Structures are given as structure tokens and as C-alpha cells.
Image 1 (cartoon, rainbow, N blue to C red):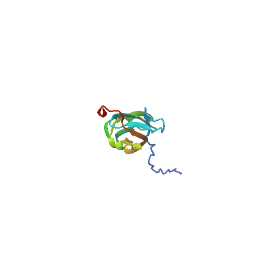
Image 2: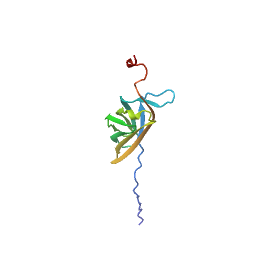
Image 3: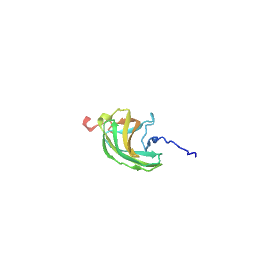
Image 4: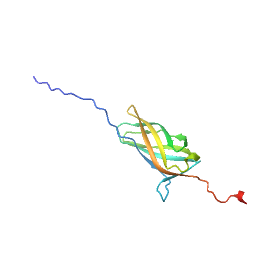
Length: 138
């Protein structure tokens, strides 16, 4: 009597990383960088794309640089093989003036594990107040 025997080796599932894209950015014509004004609340929208067969739950997001107060942040659930929009309301402080990039860290949960995505964007931070004529100069 011949009995076929098969040995199975457990393998860890390899998940595809979270994909992202900014929506509706104001770009500078000369450099092509995203333009943000300091000391204003700016709403950023990120389209998150999931190419895995399980849903992704965003746990938190934080702005690593420049110096920013995160006023509000939506935490969407991205369906399996789907997409969702995450909104961040950022108040860029005066120290952000002249910084070359915006860095956002997104912490998310997928299939029981916690993962981190770093979102980086070449940016220009400007003051919304223009110098020039002032009534004080009269």
C-alpha cells in the first residue's frame, strides 16, 4: 500500500503597501512643488488605495515636518481592493516658512498587524501676508 504524504511549510503572507495620492493641490508654476501658506488652516486630502484582499483601518496620522498643529484628521477604513479619502486639517506654524518638504506618517492596521506609511511631498511654504504698503508708513 502506497500512501502519499505531503509536507506543508507555513509561510508568512506578504502584504502590498498602502498607496496614496494627494488630491487638489495648489502647485507652483515654476518649480511644480505644492504651495502651502503658513498660519492658516489648510485641508489636505489623500486618496488611499488598498490592493490587498483585506481591509485597512487607519489608526492615526501625524505631520512629522514641518512644525504643524494637526487640527482634525479623518480615519477612514479602506475596503479590500478599494480606495478611500483621508482628510487632514493642518495649521502650519511660522517655523515652517522655507521648509522644503511635507512629511506625514500614517499608522494603519491590516490583518491584525500594525504598519506605517511615510508620505512625503516636495513643498513650498509661504506667508499669506505680503510686505509692501502699510498705513503705518504715512
